[in-house]
Image 1 (tube, one colour):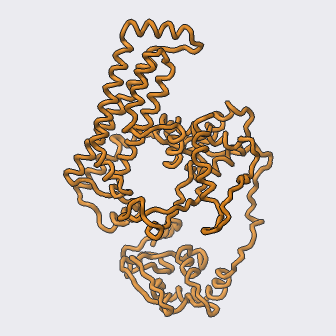
Image 2 (cartoon, rainbow, N blue to C red; image 1 turned 180 degrees about the vertical axis):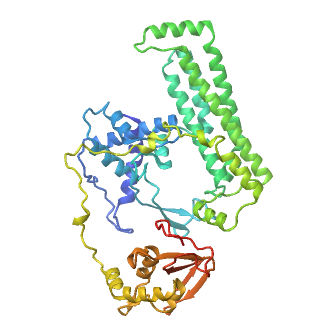
Length: 478
């Protein structure tokens, strides 16, 4: 029985309760065997579990980077030779699509013994185990997926991992050296889970009361880390004793695989390094809390930040400091490396198709909505006559009612003539006046602009718009 089977055994009946359509208060309390659909051969479940285990290994190796589906397929084909890519795509699509779970929980002021009225209804869709990129199809574990693999691996909380560290000493005493890497990996998973929890709390300290729980257990965490560290230091010291080295040599000769004593020492060393990092992060978190430096960090809207920088430029000293830190030292010799760009260029590719794609613009279908064409055909001549007399700014065009056509609204079509001047005449250009405008239409809509665009047959910059600029696809000077 695998670790995933044990996880399913512990949760299957809970899923049956969640999906049950039994009416509350019904006297029919007998339960029959649940009828489950499917192939009933475990194929899809095995593929999913193998994929999740592989993504966890890659998560450790690449620090939570995305993995291409081709690498996943090559790994699964070691177990299932000839596995089609469509089967892998189905498993990925299913595990990356969230499903809603409904539950109830007591309010923040009530304990677990709250009455039914005091337990509020909740639901969550954070059930996707895999995160998939839309453009490249690359995948990685979600926090829920990482938690599922952790639960399947039967990793205990760090507060109880000191007993796992004692298993290392027991394995050395019994000569069961092959178990030591698995035991240290379990401790590493627990340490890494707490490390990621600390990182999330630092980013958002109001998250589900995790901050208060960490503060309450801080002393216990430090004691557990100290005990684990001391136990593993004793174990590593035993590895250097002549008696244990002789026992290991005798055990290695009886094994089919090639073992080295440095493998065990390296496994213990990784845990000791992780303990040092976790202790430092925990101390930094407590110092930030004590000095009031910790605060919630929200999602940054970089587009809004860019607009603010355009409206209000930063101070010169700040700008120079940022440019000096971000710009390359020698611009003429700055070339990107190919290695970090290759994963961005990977894409999903289906089987080679003999069908050639031919693009023929002559056979393009006519637009379903000919409103723009009718607008230009009906109002185009009058607009050109109007523009020959004087340039037409956008506020003037709206005031004169050029956007009204066929007892309807053609505001979008009128704006198209300002964007693509070739719709009206090839000699038209757009002049930009730095004066902002604000206009309210008859139907209540407000049109605002930071600058005022004007259509016209400009041979030189108009007097009203000394800073006018031409369109980037026009050669005529403005």
